[in-house]
Image (tube, rainbow, N blue to C red; front, side):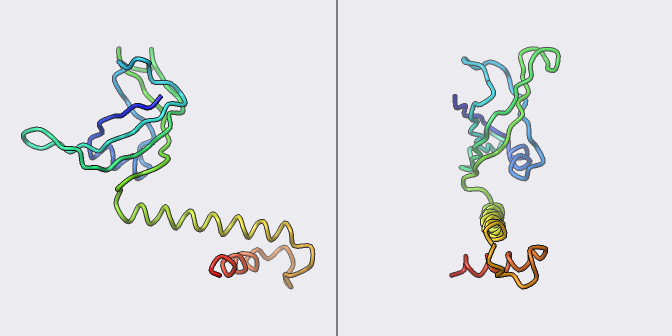
Length: 141
């Protein structure tokens, strides 16, 4: 089930930065929030008169839902993990892109180390820098 939730800017920023990994919400949905649900957190800025949606959105998966003795009556606490951000600050999107490139490069380096039975590395398998350098070169081609 996918739930669209209005999220105030300060809380939106905390989720985006990784500082906040939970949501406390009224437990008034039908069907109720459950592990495996998707949350679409829509940034909302309050103004003096009312408020406005900014267009920034975070998609998150619900991992765990706490109810009962852990929460005030009628509320639940959800453990969440962000999976995707739309129209987020340019720096955050750029950083995510760089991290994905680094992961791909390290996976390639590990694969090279695993498959290297022909002795391409003159320093031996104990020198992973050799494989990281080769992986970077291969990915830049």
